[in-house]
Image 1 (cartoon, rainbow, N blue to C red):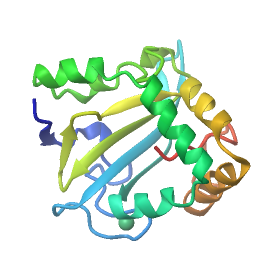
Image 2 (cartoon, protein in one colour):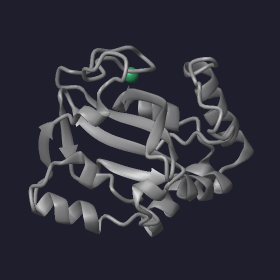
Image 3 (spheres, helix red, strand yellow):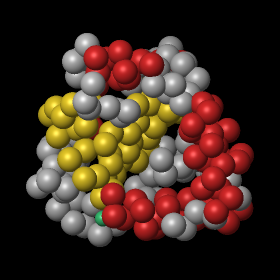
Length: 190
Ligand SMILES: [Zn+2]
């Protein structure tokens, strides 16, 4: 079945404006007019308390994403691709797509790698692939838990980890990043 486009769920809106994110984080290109891009958000979660904090959010156009990924070391890029191929499980996404079910909460209800329910994840990132003002419901939206991100980070070279940290420091310097509970080495551009 073909992937399906549907309206951007509010979950992926800008927390500042309450509207879809309209600019690429890196090149500031306008996104809502047929551009292809990815939205990523990271949260910390407080299991049992039922609250979560947004750590960062951004949209990045596919051109900039490619440019950024060129900064990964070859070894890191290969290991990340292998990790995703071996560990990502798209059965849940395929079922939802087949059912034409576009409730984003269902798509991110468990970790795409570990299967852990979202309410049990102390940290997690969510991702959505978009075209203009629509989300491509296909392999995304998905959620990836802190546990899986840790495994990916362990595979990365120091060079790539430096790149992640520089990226985060450049675009989300303190005090923008207000969550003291998010670990220092946490950033994975996926
Ligand atoms: Zn861009």
